[in-house]
Length: 455
Ligand SMILES: [Zn+2]
Image (cartoon, rainbow, N blue to C red; front, side):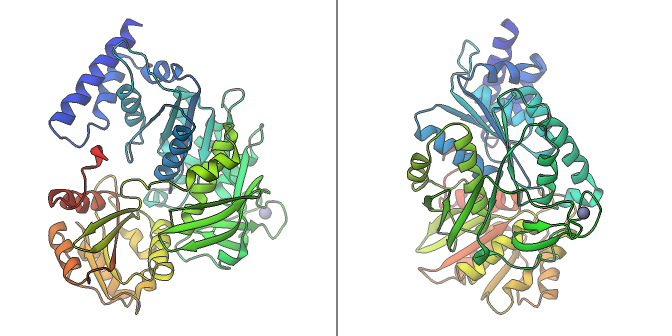
């Protein structure tokens, strides 16, 4: 107990210091410090929660889904502790728990809602013992080039098999790799999926990894494709198919990045988030909230007033221009954000930002799997930006897209965008994680946006 209190105090002091010195919101360092003093600190702190925890993992959509679940719990009067966007390793989660702990070392909150990197999920389950564990999707990433996704998927499978009594796995049935995990579990998961052919395509985008049947190795047949390799699939030899979802979204309506509407088991949900990928996030949050006992009617009412998370989909206004910032970090994610911006929102002005720091993935060859061809003939200005702006420029050239001069300086990229965007028009910033941070940092410096730890 003394050790726990000491760990909490040391961690909190570190957090305060790094915030004062403005080292980016003090996101994970307090977690590192506290874990050195008490390696079981996260378990001890999450045991203080009066209701329990939810952990959310997957390649795309973690932050938005976690925000949605927090929003729903908070609206129902619960005090929620949640980790910050991007701080999704075990240290970031520990730091978040520390931040809400009192001087006596007790975490005073009802629920923990944590987004967890896929590779950290087994450890998070072990330390947090969550009531609900959500797996959104397992998409091809830069990781996949080294076969790591398969090994991570196997570890997630083993971890889910150890969930505590009464805990539930909440799984996306439309993702073949996630379904394979769920089918192996003794206790049935809560399956969710989309069910609306009007928003589906028939073929996989070339970026999606073609999935094979886990039983016989045959190529899966897709009757509907929603996002990446997520859709309605079956093996031609009839030994594997998409499990029937218990909760499904029907009657989907999309309006660019602005809003979406869908029906889940008779409940109509309308909300200020756009894009088909967000239908998955909303459905996952709905399924999680239902599994925790929230009422369908309440969920629908509360979601109407949701505000999007930093960088995932943020709007910044400057001199009458509307900048929309959307995080796009891998081929599946990029294809969806480009498609949404071009086809649904009619976007014409773009910054595409690519960095190669650790958080972005140091190997940027995946940009050749993104269908930038979607921009051809539709976009009026496309500015390649970020540390690897020149690689992006080459990729855009091969896609037949007429792009502006590559801009490695975020300030110059923004100036060029503003110069080429009329007042009242929208411009889209589609960027990898640290490229987004760089552009956003420049927006903050110019007073166009708030520092993210103050929002
Ligand atoms: Zn098969």
